[in-house]
Image (cartoon, rainbow, N blue to C red):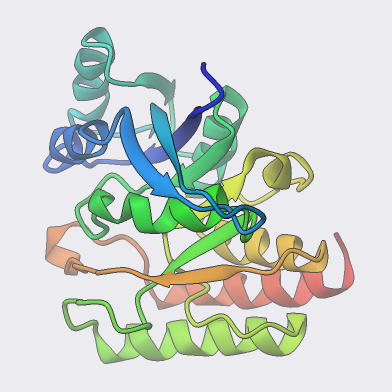
Length: 250
């Protein structure tokens, strides 16, 4: 890579997403080798950075055609596919994707269509301009969004409030999928989560290590349960325990 080229890794957990998988992969891949105009905070002149991309997709024991689709897309050179024989959870899939990633920056992307890859320039720019090492895309900072279920909004707000109280932060959307990190941030964080408690674990541990989260507004097109949404209120209980536990242990 040239001095003006940076590689970023898209970490994509996949579980029974055959209906949307190819669409989201091609949307992500359309951003390969995009060029951004940036002005680092320590400089005056604007620079152009080319962003080389890799996609690390981990099939989490899908029972539909997701793995077959991944293998076909891998044969086209669009991604690297890793597969579990049985379902282990989103957290386990992300941890595996991190192990296979080679980029200087890592970005988490779900395999549905709730989050729009066209937000990548907005998500990556604060890191490229050296303003921060961690960026979260917030669904609550004014971006366009499909109306969420009221109980989901309450649950999200409560978990975010608990995060802010325990870790002295002021973030607005702890449970967002779009989390972006410099490689060295994740390298210094031992992750244990296997399922949806990954979101609070990552957030708790990076805040404890002194990293401040830079938020940017993103759009959101939340899907319904009949469209394949997996998370339920039951996932809130381990999330609460995870936030409390990692406040006092690592």
